Image 1 (cartoon, rainbow, N blue to C red):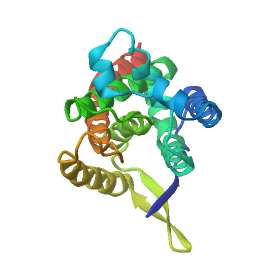
Image 2 (cartoon, helix red, strand yellow):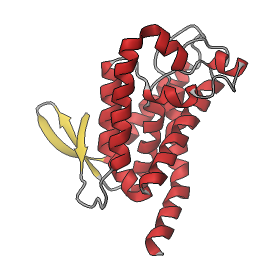
Image 3 (cartoon, rainbow, N blue to C red):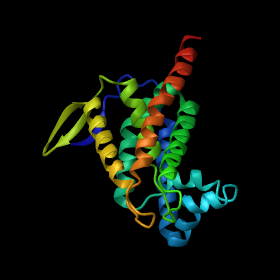
Length: 216
């Protein structure tokens, strides 16, 4: 199942932050392509390097969120952010959504760090932060339908099913990835799980602020 859109008829605001985040990810990727390995090593999050010098490596907690390992990695992340981010931003407001997104990204990095303390492999990608957006979406819009491309047909599927399948796959993949050595690259599944759980839990806080603002 390949998601291609959802219902935005109830959206009240233009998702400016979502668009800006997509633009920043695209910009960073083009800079990354021109900068090559030197740029990646400097601005990606490297667990062992961060633990050795947290102050000097602090910025990589944020810059790594806007970097990607290739066109497919970038395209998949931006597709999910475009489909699900605008609705969450509509509920949290522009500033609230930005703070929420960054916190989810930080939580994702922390989750991956716990399982790769000695790793010298650069960690990069918006997947953890976007996983947080999915965690919020599934709580805020449990009855939403997502347009899914299945073969040559476009069919509506429950968001609970689409995101639920995604999370289960990440969970099982993540359990397997814990056994990887520190010198093994690949997908940072624990970051996905950490970001998703953080997004789900933070939604209770940000949704509460949103309701208070709407009823004021």
